[in-house]
Image (cartoon, rainbow, N blue to C red):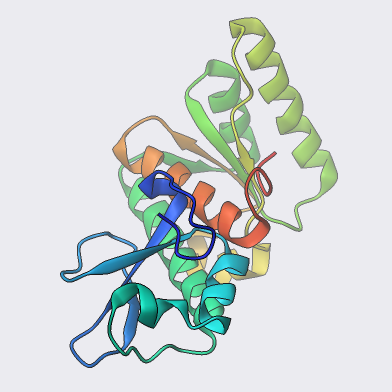
Length: 197
């Protein structure tokens, strides 16, 4: 249950926090840290509200040291987690880049999500949107999700030569991990049902 809204939800829509041995509040993104935890909706606005209202100490029933910039710190961790999973998925062949390869993966049904740099040219985005629409109509399925979470420069800095403008996550554990982390980051930044085309 979210300590801000008091709403119940699934773990993939919530963030867990625990108090470390030193009393420092720690985000538990992997859900594996020991100790009593509390949950907040996976939205930056809710995390910042929990900090402002001093809800973490009450929920954890102990005094905790809370970073006043916890909202930004959590976003940084979510970004790092997604970028790390993209690299892992690439190594396992479940994350491909390049407009031509991505379009082929979308049209063939192999892609489970599309990613564009936030500053990608509209022409390239439109071409892949058309491929996504054609695949959905042909197979009578929903469109695959589309994310625009990082600029080309951010991707280049984070991934080196692995930076991209257009990419696709493919089916498999690592590819699905990319989609899951992208969904959480999009929700965290933009709120529920936003940030995903």
